[in-house]
Length: 437
Image (cartoon, rainbow, N blue to C red; front, side):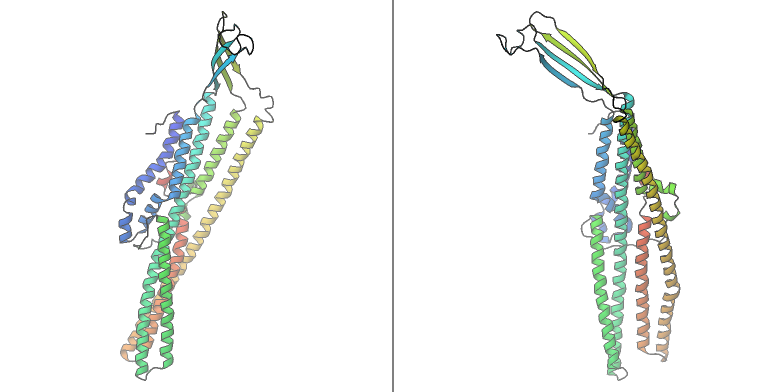
């Protein structure tokens, strides 16, 4: 079992880093064991997201990095290890006592210890720097979680819409098969032409090609989903696509900084640079090293104790230590400017995706309110005309064909808009996943 020792700050750092990992693990644990069962019944979006995040190797690697940097926090607050010194002084190298110890009056054997002293204030600053490094690694972990969730969501949406496209394509092929049979019957009854039969055959062939392509799209989408869920081969997906409503577009920059992993990482870079600058500034005052050595003399001479202190002289402080402080300070300036640029980019991306989502939803609304009702009405009119003898079966079949084509048009647009929605919605994390920072 790992024992956490050290300063209160180091223990708090460990607790903060573990809070995110532990809370996240509790949320993922129950569904991870249901992966095989979910594959048989078809993965829902929530199951795909949670299984993906519980099994992702990149997330687990980021978790290991957080645990490793948390261990360094304990080390940062400790004094350096002492140095043991063993020595022999004034050892004769010729004469009757050459290379002997304890025979000559001047030969002394020494044993001592040296300790570099780092002030408590410096050690607190070093602990803070290590703490900020933990926060940086935690933000990297959160970026990986967001990436996996976004990619898994997009893969699931592609799979569910590919499945729907296959269903519609199968319906279209079945319908065109009926239309071909009707045209052939008309041709045999001398009420149709060979051109009508050839055209129906051509249309059916194209529809079958589209069905094969749709089936391949579904297989490819399931393969991609399997890659992100790491749950073997996903055989099916289930459930309905979510409503294309996004809460992200309504978040303020301050709110985004708490849940958007890219911004969290950029802000942690500022904290890390500031802590590094504080450590560099504290190093302007060098550490002293004290030591004590016990000497045992040969012959009849007494034994001795030697005490000493080593004090570095920062005679080039302006060109050495101060340069370090300036360099670290500039890194802090760079981190702040990088955050501002990142924030502008994130806000611009969100605004762009929000505009695309709004446009896509408007297009969908237009198709659902105009094209689909018109296609349905045309089917009803053509069927009524056929039943009354005022229309032909070919007209009724053509109307149904156009209705299925319109359904496919709307479905393809729904898939396109849903992917925009996923890019927008899943670039942030739920607050409970980031609240432990």
